[in-house]
Length: 105
Image (cartoon, rainbow, N blue to C red; front, side, top):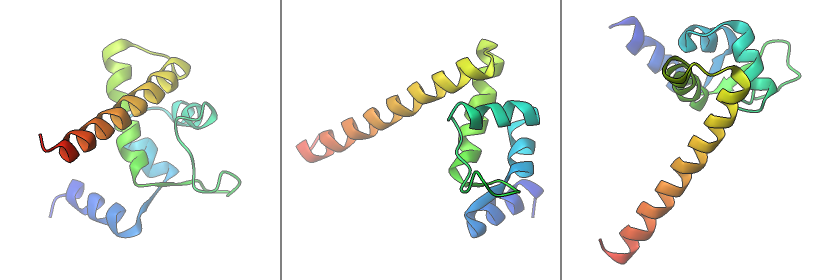
C-alpha cells in the first residue's frame, strides 16, 4: 500500500491530523500554518492544547491554501481571506445544487 493511501486511511480512521502532519501535507512552513490558525482560516480542535490537532477537513484547506499561494503568490493574511471567500462560494454552490435537485433539474 502506498504511503499516501496509508496516510489517508489513518486520517479517515482517526478523524484528526496533528499539526506536524498538517505542515507536511501543506508543503508550507510551520509559521505559515500558525498564521492561518491566527487569521482563522484553520481551527485546531483545542487551541489551548499543547499539541494542536485538526479535523480531517483541514487537510483539504491547507492543500487549497498551498495551491492558491503558488498560483497567486499570496501572503498568509491574504490567503486566509481568499480561503474564506472560497469556502463561502463552495457553500453557495452546494445550496444551488440542492435547490436545483428539489426542482427536478
